[in-house]
Every structure is written in C-alpha cells, then in structure tokens.
Length: 111
Image 1 (tube, rainbow, N blue to C red):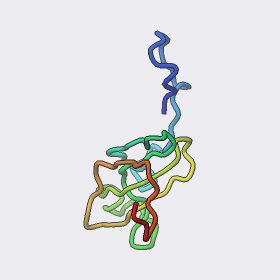
Image 2 (tube, one colour):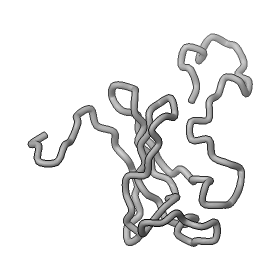
Image 3 (cartoon, rainbow, N blue to C red):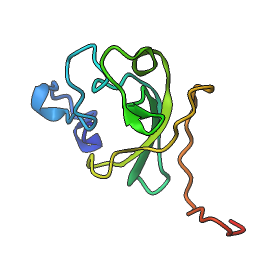
Image 4 (tube, rainbow, N blue to C red):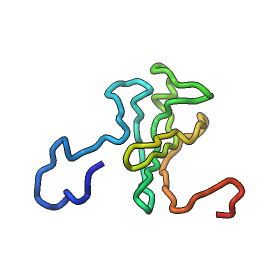
C-alpha cells in the first residue's frame, strides 16, 4: 500500500512509504501467499484478491503441499490489513480476476 497523497509531488519514495498489507514471509512455504490479482472496493475499505491458499480440505496446508504453491483462492481483507481471510476452498478451480462490489450480499437476499 502506498499513500496516494505522496504520489506526484516529486519526492523520491523510500521503504517507509510502503506498507506490506499481506505481511508475506520471504520463504517458499505455504505462509507466503502468491498474489495474482486484486480489486479495491468502491468505498476504498476492502481489498479482494486471489492468492495461493493457506488451508484446504479443513486443514492448514504444509510447506510441501503442491496446492499451496500452485492453486489460487479468493481472499478478502481491510485496507489496513485487518480481517484477512481466505474465502474459497476449491481445489478443482483456480480463482482469478477478483471483483470487489459495493453491495453486501447476504444468504437469501435479493441483492
């Protein structure tokens, strides 16, 4: 994440200007989620993204699990990094091209 107010004022960026929301470790393990796409909600408060899964089939994935390295699932989190959660667990399908909507979709609702 980068504060848009700092873009275009001519000042060079340094490492403190960037915030790592996903806090991925620098390893080849399951904890390092490889992001392949994202979308910011219209209100600017939620990010949906596709990334490698951390869990599947009701268990945490190990560092040697091929699914942790090759699959992509749908994730969501607040722009401050809070509430990060994997939403899907579909090993037969790879999530791609996430879209963040401005409406709340509830079970049984017509929205």
